[in-house]
Amino acid sequence: MPTFCKHAAPHIPRLFRGDEYGEVEEVPTYWERAKGGISVEHIDAVMGIAREMQLDLLTDCLADRTLLAQLSSRDQKAYAALLDEAEAAGGPHALESLLPLDRLLQFCAVTPSGSMLWRNQAGPMQRWKRAGDTPYPSSPDPKHPDTKRFIDSLAPTQPGARYTNVFIMGMPRSLSAKYIARQERRLAELGYMASAAPNSVCIKSPAASKALPVGWLTGTLADAPSAQMSMRHAVAFGDNPCGNDRALTTISGLHFVSVAASEPNLPERLRPYAVGGLEAGTACVLTRLAETQRRACGQPVEVTSELLRDICAAARAQTQALQMAAPSPSP
Image 1 (cartoon, helix red, strand yellow):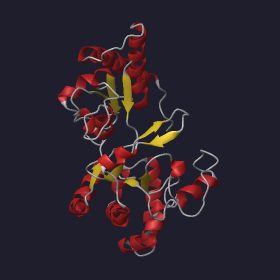
Image 2 (cartoon, one colour; image 1 turned 90 degrees about the vertical axis):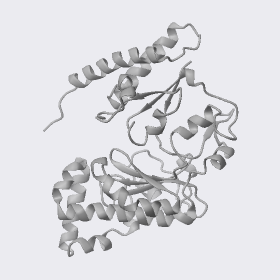
Image 3 (cartoon, rainbow, N blue to C red; image 1 turned 30 degrees about the vertical axis):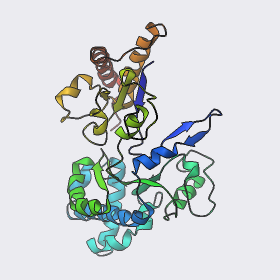
Image 4 (cartoon, helix red, strand yellow; image 1 turned 180 degrees about the vertical axis):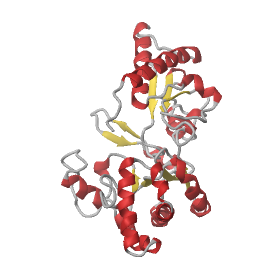
């Protein structure tokens, strides 16, 4: 049966599998091979660089508030309020004191949901190292008090934590290139890099990419076990083919479907497999692939370029029809 790959959590240099009881267990050799985390010795320096990038963006927004139009409506309101606070406190220099690192990491301290800086540890969140004995939240509701307490307990740097990446939130791709370039050398000296996502910037090790777990599962990486996945029966999906999904588009033999809402710079070779529609587009392709598999009466279906091109053409038309039929947002 075709394997449908969607690497939603980017650049995680740890791999987990389910054991015979359905529990999650780590594959320790994968972490050793990947060498793609952010070491505890470097994490504070990386967080300092991430904070500088966020402060640089806000300083520019303070000088030219038209930049706010490139942010999401939620962030526009939150950033405008923060800029008002800075102006009342004396201007650009006030941002430094208004935004210490702990405020940037604090849940809902600036924006109505989430934090301005976020760093991942790998594996199930229940196992993340955190301050004190704060329990895992009893409710998935991000506004629940238990959720806020848990996320705030992650803010202090934890000894022994395996940090995988850092995200600067609320920094859209239309603005981020300037701030990435400004810190490129400093990050490289530490052994890391920054890449633009549609609405954020990810700081990570160059060794970690979305191609890494695919190489492991197909047995092409050094020290990897025998192949557990066949490229002939695999499809990858991504919404950022010219950004943090790029590595998936360059793997020999792996078909990639772009579900990006908009990607004007998509390479010519990928355009026949561009569906758009994000989750809806993914569902349209998956439905057709699953139907193809059902018609094969249990025989594995090889995903050829011709098969996928036809499926993507039909899914693209369906996705566009769904978007046209969707009600317009309220003014």
